[in-house]
Length: 486
Image 1 (cartoon, rainbow, N blue to C red):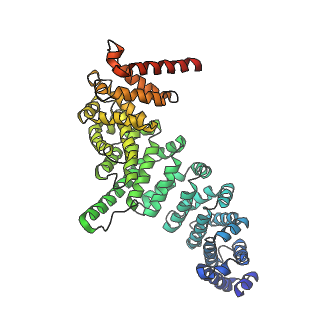
Image 2 (tube, rainbow, N blue to C red; image 1 turned 60 degrees about the vertical axis):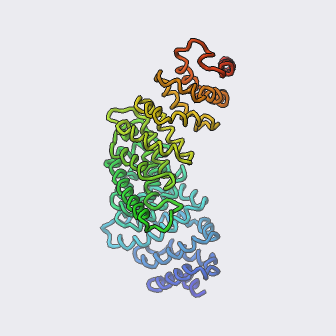
Image 3 (spheres, one colour; image 1 turned 90 degrees about the vertical axis):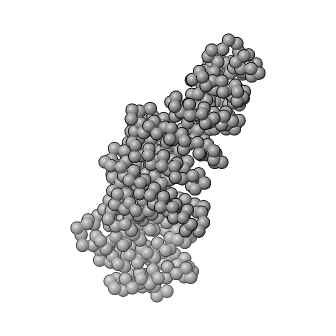
């Protein structure tokens, strides 16, 4: 009651500081929830933030903001805050702080207030109603300004990046962030400055992954920034070494148990490789990355030292990135230089029990099997038997890349007989029957494979055996559908 009276009487100076400290202590203690849930206290604290001078009462505002941050952890009060305009008020306060430049004597001390403010916004960002207000109030540009001005303050940067990390999962915020032209420079500067600060690094990499997930312009903007790929490569090397050392420590008998979830280093690598995979979707960037030996070398290294059982997501992401890069047939391609070694690594994935890993490995083989050395490797290691077996999966995502490998194998006349020997013709016909009417892309792959296989036939029956009649009926039916559609 005394606290509320003091706040309502609008005390100032040392008295205001004492009252705000008391409010902070009360709100920090869970046992005081019955007091904290009194919305009169919230009104009073918001009034302090709204009216008190930023520079003269900085310390009092830090405690006031800290109290509000604790209150935001209460679901009931969180919605009260939103309804009382706290989001707009906090952004206005951030704008005032951003207007105070580095040469000002209050600049450094206001960093403490900004940490508390950002922590509150981070909690509010989980609330849909608050996110709508953050979007309407232009939160992203203001957060970027704060990030640029406070790049040397790790605590402030971590809090702000944490907010942006949450918001970047939503399309409207991701678009707003992409529109902040300097955000890529800021993120790269922070990654270089705080390379071993895992909590900060992982959030920035997560944001970059979201920015580059669907937007070609974002991929271009990031790629053209000076040292962007070198920064990612350096991070990759750093966290690969950290993970390798941790793995050596574990296998040396000092580890107590195998972790169910990715380690901190693995988590950074997972998200970093996702960025590389996203960037490689862009034709020009993908071609450049395919020729970047350090990048490809590190991706291959992941397949060398890490098994699917160790960390499924890391291995699958590495295979996905290699698949994207293997698409590009460019001069000095690092993927092509290492293609036989990559094929050896992929063989391990094919033998795993993890279907996601198997599918990614098959996709890479689909691209690499355009080279005769890989086709010879596939025949030598009898990988073609595995590809034929995958046609039984009844899963389009599995059948399509497997059929792509088989199509490439039938380019060589001396390799075509394997289809008949392994029952491949029948499985291709079954696949055509299952997917043909609804999936013309897969149907074309199957028909091209059968076309290559039958290139030098003297008769349909001798070529397709017992599947001849079924194939003829099926092709006639599909051609009939084409004519009716036409």
